[in-house]
Structures are given as C-alpha cells and as structure tokens.
Image (cartoon, rainbow, N blue to C red; front, side, top):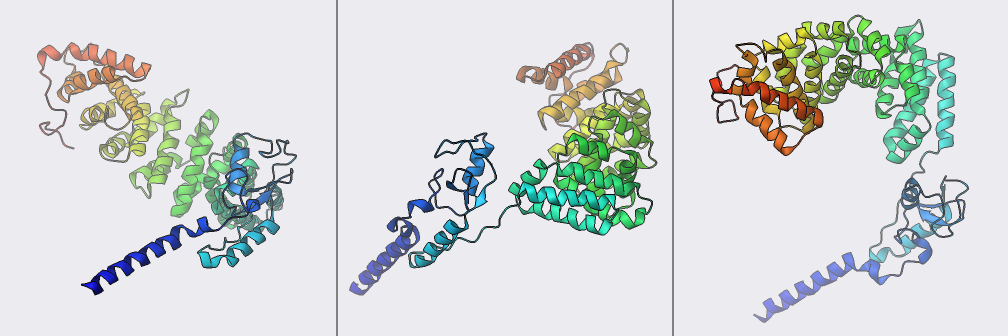
Length: 443
C-alpha cells in the first residue's frame, strides 16, 4: 500500500518536472532586450537593419512596410531605403546565446536564407533579355529556371520578382523564341517560360500584349494540341491571361487552326481541374465578349459543347460549375445554342436545380439561361419550355430567390419568368418536391 502511494507521488513529481522543463524554461531565463524585435517584442529569428540603424525581425518590419508605413517605428524617421540588410552580428550573438542555454531546452535558431533583392532580380531579368536577343535558348532557359526556383522559394521572393515586372520580360522572351525559325530547338525554353509565367499570375498588361501576339498565340496553341500534360496545362493558363477582355486576341485565337478544338478537348478529356478551369475561362471570354462573335459561338455549339457542359454541371466542384454555367449562358445568346439546350433533356431540370444550390454566381447564370430559353416561348400556346420549368419546380425556386435577395439584373429576369410561368399554372399543378425522383427523364 505504502509502496503504491510512493510510486504515485514519484510519478506526479516527475510529470510536474517534465512540464516545467517543457514550458517554463524560457520563463526562467531573461532574454536580452537587444535580442527582441522592437515591433513584436519577440525573440528575433532573422534580424535585419534598416537605414535608421535599428534592428528588427524581418517578418515584423516587412509587415510594417507593407501596411504603408515608411517611417521607423522606433525613431519615427523616414526610411531612406526600404531594403532590409541582414544583421549577421546580432544573429550570430543570438545563435551563440541559444547554444549556451541549451540546458534550459532552448534550441539554436537556424541561419535564415537571405531573400532575393530587387537588384539581383533586375540583373537576372536583364540577362534574360540579352539571351533572348542572342537567341541563346540554353542560357535563357537556365535564367528562367532560376527565376522559377526563386518564386517557389518563398512568398517574399515571389512578391519581389513580380514587383520587378518579371512577367513582361519573360513574356517578351517567349514571343522572341516563338518567332524564331528553328522552333523545334526552342521547345524546351518555351515550355520553361510558360510554366514560370503560370507562377507569376496575374501578369501585367505589357506581358499580356506579348502573349497576345500572333507568334505567341500560335506557339501556345501548338503546346495545347501537341505538348505533354504539364505543357498543355501551362498553355491553357497562359491563354487565359492573354485573352482576358481583349477582343483582338480573341479573334486572332479563333482563326488559328485547331485552337477551339484543343480547348474543348481539355474539357471533354480532362487531365486535371486546373486545366479544365483554365480552358473554360478562355472559352468564357470568347463567348461573352463585349461584341459577341456569332461564328465563334456557333463553332463551339457544333462541337457539342452545350451537351458537354450540361453533363459537367450535374455533379462537379463549385468553381467548375460556375464557369461551365457562364459558358453555357454565353452559348445560349445565339439561336443555335438555345436550340441545342432546348432539345437536351438535362437542360431545364439541371438549371432549376442549380438555382440557390451552388453559389450566387451559379444562380445568376442559371436564371439567365432559363430566361433566355423561355423568352421566345412566352407567347406560344403550347409553352413547352415553360411547362417543363413548372414541372421541375422553377416557380417555387424563383419566388424564394426574390424573397432571399439577389442581384438587380437577376431579380428582373426572375420577375419576368414568374409572369410567364404564371400564365400556365392554371393548366398544370406544380409538383411539391424539388428533387427529380418522379421526373421520367434520362439523367
């Protein structure tokens, strides 16, 4: 009995000592004030000094500067330079202090990697420009790979590189090597540039101009059709950047042989969600431009894109569903697109189901498509589309939508739809259930 009690007491004492060793060692030691950051008052792990001579922890002072402050938090002096300089002396002192106090459970801070500076980035970019002018694909590929590695290293390096307009320089190199007659020799460097550009998104307007050139577009379409999986993904992402709100680039892309077919193939035979989303966004820009091109829309319809999109939205992730509905909304702006959607058994059940089920954006697109399909049917005696909409519960969904609130344009379309649907309610009782278990249609 006594032995058991002694064991328990010894166990409790050992537990308390272990907890004190784990949690209380730092409290037993006084950390020197010059090892603490003046902003966070925490132990500095990456001490840097600015133009005022005060040393801070890198993360703390960078957050201070990013917040729009250009004065020293301690002296209130204006920084002459915002470039932090590593304080190796303080860092070495901190590391030595950690080693001396290891018995208290204090671990030595690792030597931080010095982040890339804007000067270093500018030097690399100027070399990329020089290499592209000389058409030295090997040297250019090595330099672009270096930029790519730095971007992947840390968010800090990525911000520095993007702030140096790296996307413009790299996109200019892409155009240069796309024009070169020996295209086969340049495939490796072009693929490296594309994969790097995907990491620098969103690119600036100057970079979009380079990617929107005829040579660059032909090159990206080639990768989209004949490249390996990673090259096709990179090409789709780059095309999305190039065609964004640019009528000239959209028209030029549509004229390239096999471009539209390659985009649809990425949706029909998906290789990854990223490529599917990028392809959908490119098509979305093409069919929803400020001046819709009927020829482009009809070509997509003839490829069976309407049926393909309806099958996709039945069960997919939110982002892809939104983009697919956005593309379908653009396709239904044409008579041919509406006809294909009207003749598809999935159209009305799926579109009504997506209202208030996925997201606000998906609801807006769904209501817009339903409105376009019903618009030409409202005066007909039979009202086939309107009857079908009533059968799958569109009336109740639209009433609920107006009650919970939505965008003004969506509200106007929902109100019009309710008026048209109301003309046929006396001849058909709406089903009570919102699901489609009793609806005899192939899904």
